[in-house]
Image 1 (cartoon, rainbow, N blue to C red):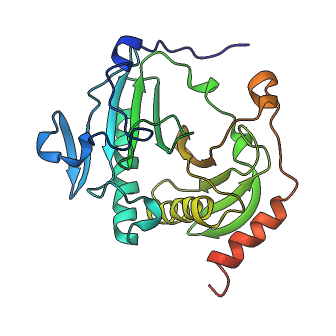
Image 2 (spheres, rainbow, N blue to C red; image 1 turned 180 degrees about the vertical axis):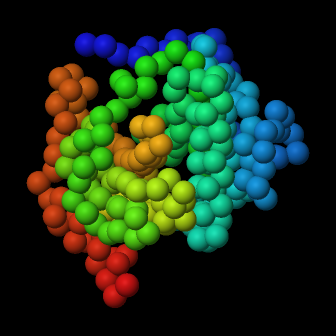
Length: 255
């Protein structure tokens, strides 16, 4: 089976700050005056080079979502959420069309099970010159039960989850509809973190592209099923219809 491999520099990895487990540790993103290698800003949204470039032969960047260390996407006013997603998607597109990279990843880690190390809300952009984009995902992973649709953007519950269980997809017909994309990301994160049937403290957001088509997956994170880890078996939950009805009743009834 063909796979993409990337080399992780453990010497640099040991130097990275961490304050998700060790919450008393200082937050490097709370002192914007001390940040270096800033590329672009939009108010308190900041894009900069990652100081700890742990992936060899890749360029890593951090997108700080705002000044509030203890906030997260469900807390943002709609205008800030719209600016954040438009800003991130614009720089993601610029990196993809720069000619420097075969693949550009755009994603967010949040919480203990997400793979993140810093609590302050942020996203990441990583440009790889040599990875094969056709090995990153399959379009069928964004098929699902439609929850809602507006402005040509669909929110659905995945019927072919990438790992398993309850994955929410945002599928726009036009990547320029960033406000609708942002609204559905915010709803997906709020549902998983605050309205879900089990307590969660972690999630990921992954952005994908296939040519000009883009897709977003919001994935709850908990201990990963050994069926997937050991055997690549993707578990589809039996209550997708029930979860769809819950999301619709909370966010879309009467609209």
